[in-house]
Image (cartoon, rainbow, N blue to C red; front, top):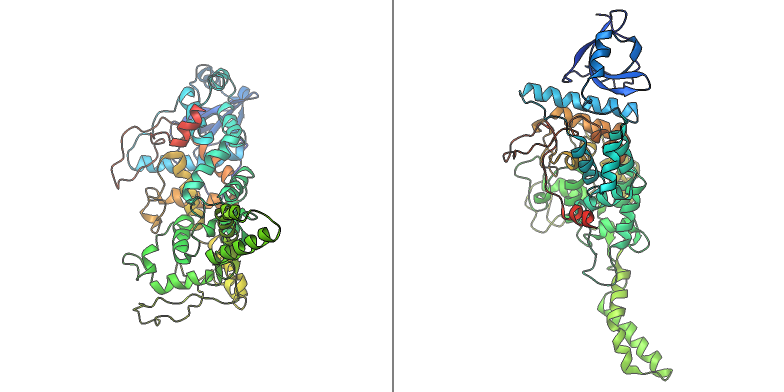
Length: 495
């Protein structure tokens, strides 16, 4: 079958099939193409073929029958994207979803109306419902690009920064570091918001959190390690759960009963932080420092004829200042990590030193190079760990954040739960999960760019699924799941 000459952009090798609701198009020379109607733009008809490619065909080159059909054609499922590369990337995701739906004999949800779309876009991207004026402006817009344009505008809004920060605050467990004292979490909060606002690559953001040094009020990125000040093992368990989608918490105390993790491996990974102190336990020592300062202050006040009795009123303030100064991340020249005193396995003895060592995700350890380059310099252990964790070939890092972002849009991850994707092949759509991870790498971990593609998919722009998904049952993304508004969305909508 001859086909049109097409204007197309392919982002990866290979093609995908499975797009729904296609028809046969014919040009004035009798050439045919199976494709889905996507929209119109500047005298051209925009089609999406079975390979997920965007095709632009001059309107006057179509057959009379096609032109007649277009005169009364329903609105396309997805308006053409502001950027054709975004449309092509979204179409490939849709093809993977539609193929799985066809295999499961599941019918996709109908396309969402403009009224539904505008509310969903504001809630999911900006974290609030649209105003009446914003809704009216969108509904009255006749442009074929209005959906994609609104998505892009919202991704560049302050609401996007605030809404994604709220997600990160929960994911990273942001809180004031010393139980309501003088030092608050504001520097850490401001740092996270700045990363989101500037669309900083996620791998760089994670690297800075893992390698930051200094005091919290001068380096907000230290807030991640100071969140678990003095608790190296707990912090590492959370690091793996958040950034690599694997639950290793129980390996702190014994070999993992359901995975290949051993307690020795957990301690070997923790040793990359064994020379790092989170909290100044070698300098100012809490109450002792406060008492020394109070004694000096009383002496100074008495010598200068001041009211010594009033000095005691500043004791609490001095205590807060001392505690705030102790919130510091610094590296030492000694790795302090030891196996626990009750260690019971044959590969080590209780209390013996632990050398840093990376785990192997498969039969070959491909990520030790970063450590080998720095093995004689313990000040760079954290840098080696961060380079390994965020490496493009690390099979967990990109998939985990892509899966988390996907769940924000659809209400369910391609793999559940998002904190544990130890077996990607057991996910609802392994091919989709793998592709999402590859897209994250291709986009160099820029979350805003990734989400623009997700929001431009037909799947996200379909009506929501209202039926509850059974516990443990897979969801195949015939549309987003119907969800309750979060507390933050509700508050911001009122405000």
